[in-house]
Length: 82
Image (cartoon, helix red, strand yellow):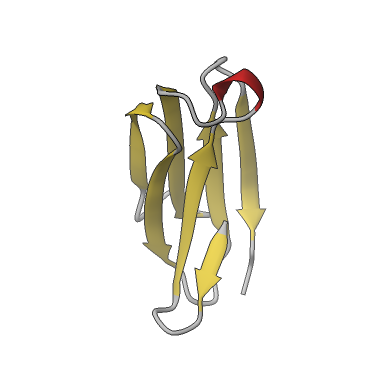
């Protein structure tokens, strides 16, 4: 997850790791405001990463989820609250 103070947007990407690093494989990423609005997602067969995806959430928390090629999902809810 990254935040750009110049645009006021949060962004996220999902990298492949381990045996999936730098190999074409399925990767996914989802970002939204903490209330679920403004969702942006990207998924597909990518060599390096899925995304970036963006959400503008000034003064709000965000939710972000990354899904790896092994279908392991990491979801962070209500993070980067501003």
